[in-house]
Each structure stands twice: as C-alpha cells, then as structure tokens.
Amino acid sequence: MITIKDLHKSYKMGSNSLHVLKGINFNVAEGELVSIMGSSGSGKSTLLNILGMLDEADAGSYTLDGVVIKNLNEKIAARYRNKFLGFIFQSFNLISYKSALDNVALPLYYQGVKRGERIDKAMSYLEKVGLANWSGHLPNELSGGQKQRVAIARALASDPKVLLADEPTGALDSKTSYEVMNLIQEINDEGRTILVVTHEPDIAEMTKRIVNLKDGQIIQDTEVKQVRALQNV
Ligand code: ADP
Ligand code: MG
Image 1 (cartoon, rainbow, N blue to C red):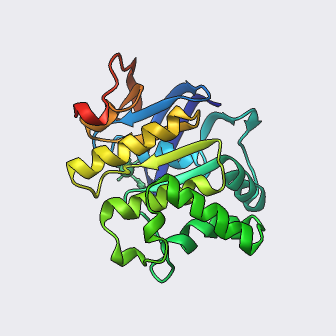
Image 2: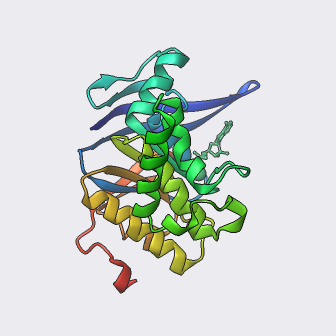
C-alpha cells in the first residue's frame, strides 16, 4: 500500500537547514496496523505529513496504492488525499459550530454526495463509533474521547484506503486513550490500513508493528508478538 525509499527532508530556516528525515525506507502492506514511535522531535509528524501529502520530501520516493506521489499540483494532490487518506489529529480539529453529525458529513459534502445520503452515511459512521445518541451535539458538549470518536467517524466517512493518525491519544487520559486505540483496532480488523504516530510505548503495543524513529532514522522495525487488547491494558 505504501512504499517509501530513501526519503530525506530538511527544513530551511534562513541560511540554516535542519536535516529531519535522513533516509527513511519502509513498506506498509494493505491491512497493517503500524505505529511510528519516537521521542518528540524525532521526525514522526514530518514523516506522517509526507505520507499524508501535506508536505513533500526533498529526495527519495513515495508510492501510495501504486501511484507515485511526486510533483503533484495542489488540485491533484487534494483529489488523491480525499480518495486515499483519512486524517486523525491529537487536537481533533472538529468544526466548533457544527454538530457531530455535520462534522462527519463534511467530507461527503466535498465529495459531492447529496444531502440525504450524506446524513444517512454520517449517521451510520457515528453509530459505528458508538455516538448515535450524540449526533446533534456540538464538539464543546462532548468529552475528549467522544470528540476523537467523531473525528474518527469523519476520517472514515470518505472510505479512505489508509488512516493516518498523529498522536490520536495525545490529549486523552490513559483509560480513554486505550478505548480510542481499541476502536482503531476494530477498524483495522475490518481490513483498513492504519498508521498511528505516538511517543507512548503502551499505545504502540496496541498496534501490530512498531517502527522506531530516532533522529530522523528508523532504528528498529518490529512485529508486536502480543498485541495489547483493551481488557489487558
Ligand atoms: P515529532 O513529530 O517526532 O515530534 P517533527 O517531525 O514535528 O517531530 O519535528 C522534527 C524536527 O523538525 C523538530 O526539531 C522540529 O522542531 C522541526 N520542525 C518541524 N516542522 C518544522 C517546520 N515547519 N519548520 C522548521 N522546523 C520544523
Ligand atoms: Mg509530532
């Protein structure tokens, strides 16, 4: 699903340059649940942003579902992003004046889905994340865990091939974090490919594979022998 070869990325600041990704190689097959782990500043978000086509590498190659991602204009990049990718962020990024249902329905609006169908679909995704009874509520009427569930429903609404989550539990307490990771596990069980960025080992152990990033390089890439389930955390 994802093939990355010798990826490099630097940030230029005036005459200085910060080399953040220093030759990243890895592949993710369809249906994997992978965490990218590393301490703050190791380059996790930079890598995820490149995978999410929100940023471009300086060198190396990136292939997503057979499509070479390179020098795409913004319009085509946006089309691929909508088609291939769903995003989940630490800070939820919900629209504050829209209900849970309307937040989930928004990507469908951009896909040109008609209103009735939008509402039906959005409702079914809210049901899936256990929030059918909260559809009319605004984000500030929801707990952190509920907000992240809405964000997950929104990410699923466009039926993406890959879900990219950047510290999805970063703003949640431990118990809620494990519940959100459990939902992510269930979505993966249905065959969806998911990448989770985290700096927390207990969160990474709820995925099936841990890619360890340090100072912009992969120092370890291991299968999780015993994936943690909600009841064992
Ligand atoms: P992580 O997500 O692992 O904490 P990041 O990928 O966000 O790490 O950042 C890696 C390094 O790149 C950090 O030193 C950070 O300060 C720097 N950095 C990130 N984004 C930018 C940017 N837009 N401009 C300049 N430096 C950046
Ligand atoms: Mg980050």
